[in-house]
Image 1 (tube, helix red, strand yellow):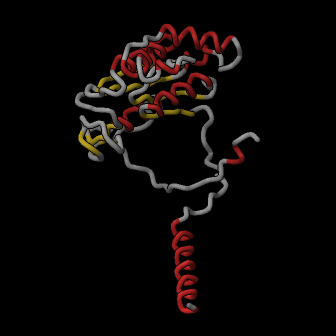
Image 2 (tube, one colour):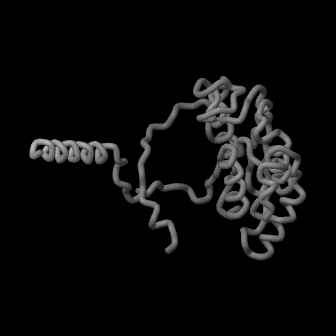
Image 3 (cartoon, one colour):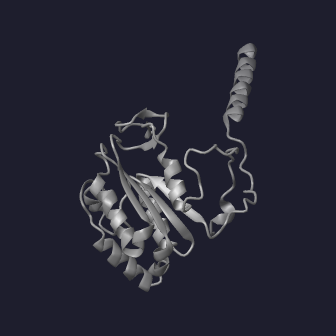
Length: 224
């Protein structure tokens, strides 16, 4: 009995040690990154692309560019949740409703004035083989941004791309719609996007900058 109790204590201690080893490193305070506040861009894929558009429009005074991979126009769903997986993903929502909503919300002071969108660049990509967020949805987002800055918008359809982020050589097949939604298509469209949003100041296909991933404490940025 005594031996069994000691064994339980030992195995319990080992389990705690293993759990401790598997825990992520403690979050640290975000260091100063010397970011340029006048060159903030936001981008995303799928739901992340929808969110990127919302952020870019709502904070247009601070966001200089938006990158959209398989995303739709501003405020597409609105207060009608049934549109989320309907017209906003599978249909043709158009841009007119989004323009009206942006103007209305700006006049109420709930988002930044839409005049800031006249200087904002937008780069948008639809997958020709994407059946999750169809091309007409992404084109509607492009039309929304063209309304404010036609010269600053670039919309393309990637041949053979399913629902995913196209890369030169990583991920699933180009026409797949499957985790991790990173598709090997032989092209670096992320580099193309960054180059467009930075007005050509970034060379597509350039060297990957050195860096590291860090976990940081977000509490200082969240209101209590």
